[in-house]
Image (spheres, helix red, strand yellow):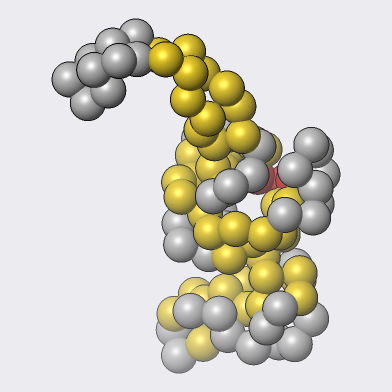
Length: 103
């Protein structure tokens, strides 16, 4: 995938999968594989070995990557598609529902 329409720090809504309808902040984006990690969504249980950070080890809950097509950008409280536009010689993201510039 070339330029991603979703960036780290964006607020997104999950539109498919076991975490459907959850909203959260994007923690990381993997543009090469088309994956995204959303805060509080797609939680998985992981068994960890004892380490310096976690001396006891045990079972931890953490977010797993999900496909970028399963999330939508949230603009002014509503999920919207994202498009690109050239303004003053710069490529900017726009919200398709309102036409507002995102960044």
